[in-house]
Image 1 (spheres, rainbow over the protein chains, first blue to last red):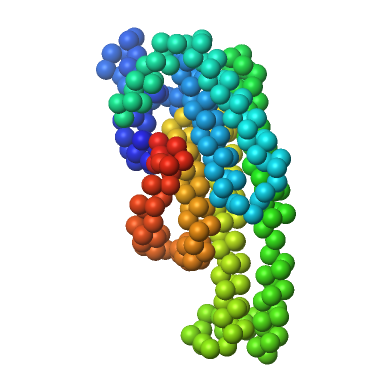
Image 2: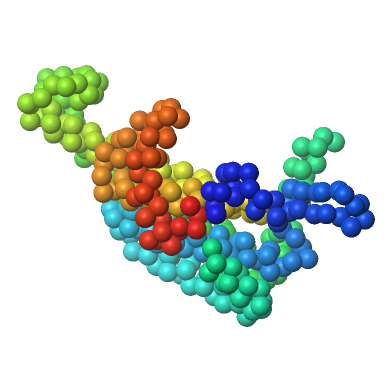
Length: 109
Length: 190
């Protein structure tokens, strides 16, 4: 989905910022900003998914550079991963239904 | 005010707004973006100590001396088809290792920049480019693994100077890249 949505012209790229204003029938708007303040779940989901990717990137870096064996690195990766896991847990607690919807959607793709 | 300036001003306002909203959910949601940026710097320092070129450079200097050529001429000799001299073969091996290391450092720096661009776009409220940067990060990690295991891949990557060569390189390694990103749980980025 990453390559398709970000490097090609795909409907998914527009979905999050697309608007059909009720007060202007027939008009289509595409906002520059993709976060919607009235949908806090989506607001938090984006950064958390991104931070989750960084956790996996950091874990992989240690293996990609076996020469860099500083123990401080593995400690920091572990702490970072724990923080991100705690934030995910908090999101699940605060928004159980939207989280379930995302899980179902991810299973389908 | 121009349309572009309006967007630039809105971006600046959105950064402060995003920070506030993310902090409202949990202060660590906002600060973790800074922590991750600092971690790339930390890893850079870890690498600096570990990926030292000095021993290989000294080795090349010695090979040049034994072959009776200046260090600059050694590069030409390495690239030539000349064979048979053990010091030339040693110079080729060392040079290949240096080039591969250079390629890995560049890929790491690209990853760091991909992160910085993604995080700042995220704070501006732009999600689509962030997904794209994640995809690039996933590909970078896979390339680092491939270059670690086969130094010639690092050399070939550095020799990509045209879009055609880039496409050929990608076609050659596409399957391995996809396999690696999926095995690391980064497949969604591809």
